[in-house]
Image (cartoon, rainbow, N blue to C red):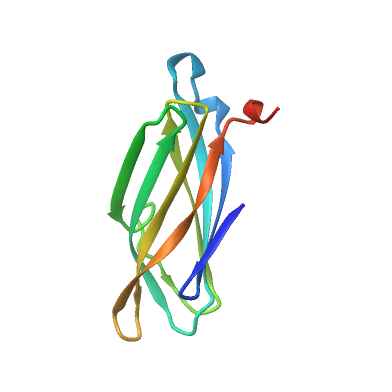
Length: 128
């Protein structure tokens, strides 16, 4: 599990290879990732948007930006967390992702970025 803390917001990520949705013969490798966002601060925050950097082991790079996560812009109260699962396809059996969330502190509407730690997408057979 990869974890970072930025301005009182803790982001932890776990990954799972999805062999049932992958097709290695056609260079299609599917991964799921579970993200837990915990508000360790004193004020409620809202997740406004996301910005991902995705890397394949063949050197290909992609960027993905958008509002919220999986269709939501969750408000996370102090001491609470928000968890979601999403997915990423790669053309290789190894890669990585990292990024940032834009958050809004509801007390004063100030906006700040929270780092998403780099995490690795690796098909289990590559670990042997």
